[in-house]
Length: 114
Image (cartoon, rainbow, N blue to C red; front, side, top):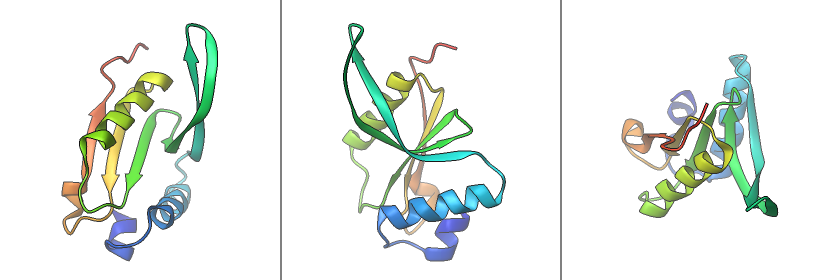
């Protein structure tokens, strides 16, 4: 919310990502950006081309967008990242909303296995 209040909507996703990393670190919250996801098929690594925008406290995936409207593929992408990484929770955040609360969607991992 702090980053959105500072900039408002309309910037590139990469700017929001860098600012959000800075804000979380200012608050002493562990965050990593652009984390590669290793994709394994039947025990064989078939790629690591996917990247998590932000990983907070090694637990929560933040998938950032700056688009006119979120689409079903955005949700599917985050759900797949959650499944592949076995993280319990993700947030899909669209910074290009006039009402920031409408752009924040909590996505639990249906496949989470602690």
